[in-house]
Amino acid sequence: DTEVTQTPKHLVMGMTNKKSLKCEQHMGHRAMYWYKQKAKKPPELMFVYSYEKLSINESVPSRFSPECPNSSLLNLHLHALQPEDSALYLCASSQSGGAVSYEQYFGPGTRLTVT
Amino acid sequence: GQSLEQPSEVTAVEGAIVQINCTYQTSGFYGLSWYQQHDGGAPTFLSYNALDGLEETGRFSSFLSRSDSYGYLLLQELQMKDSASYFCAVRERGQAGTALIFGKGTTLSVSS
Image (tube, rainbow over all chains, first blue to last red; front, side, top):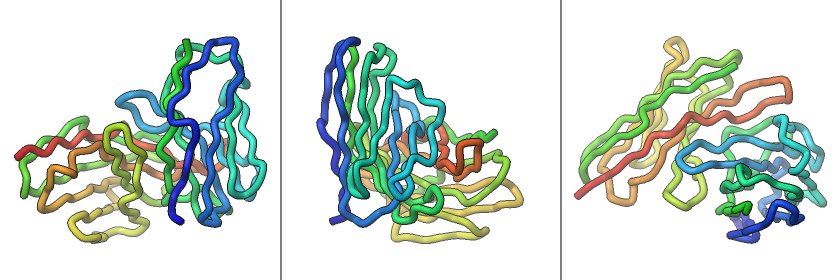
């Protein structure tokens, strides 16, 4: 299995809602990532988990809260988001947990709209 | 800090060869990667160069010159399905750790 899966594919939420994005991989990868991508822009790194521990938080607002329940799962909890947070949220994984890898496997993303 | 420069758009016809350039400025260099992303799809890893020279993978090749802080992705025998965005990316060590930083992307349009 060489796939990273993400649910849901699309999400519309109000600014007072709480929702979660889910990501799963069964490749035995030890690093997992959350990226945010706006239209016609490159992916921007949000968080990195290495061996199930948060290793990088790129100064992301606290309304985004990551969680890594085990080595195959990665969640992103969303609360009190703003309309400007509307974007494609991508999950990725890579084999090595020691350092951010140049070869990352991306999921299809969750397209989030905040109303 | 870091910056990566690549052309915003490139157009070509089927069967042609196209080169997408990437110049970079980083405080510490760990290699140059290339990713492809179709509209509405996920980025897909294409290649990685840590050392100078050419890496070939089928119709795609990637080149790196560390002394010039420059690399390129070469796509040969272009097909319509190659129409996509192409990102160069570098690993950079920042305050929070090592991260993969993407260039702004080059949109390749292949016509028949």
